[in-house]
Image (cartoon, rainbow, N blue to C red):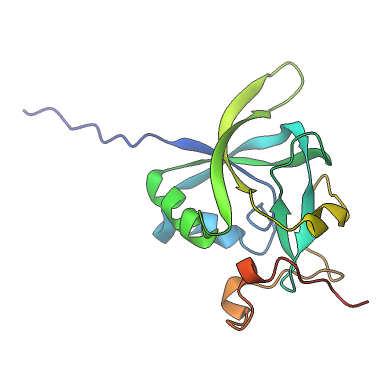
Length: 167
């Protein structure tokens, strides 16, 4: 009798802080097996203060790569396969808008840190630093997140970073 082949796919850890979190508008992307494998692992916070802001006319949460500014950001860690990472890279316009980088995340007092992929906005207009910083993102009626399929092509997110809402 032959030996069963063990199929293994290395899983990566991914820290999500915005619309991909459980209960948020884009979490269904992580839940869809058609995009790859994703499983909730634990809640976590960044090990560095970073500015988390809501910007563009689509109310997108952005984590700006500006260490030391803002708050320790709370989010969730998921274990994901390469297929899911590729799906998310496409969703997050990796290299066009975000970059995916490896950062240590706090997983609890006495538990230490774990390295995770995280999507960060590298290039952004300075006016984003004048927006209100958040320590945690929750979709709201005040700033409702606009799902990607409902956004107009007239204003792609990467061209809309300088948009300022009129109050």
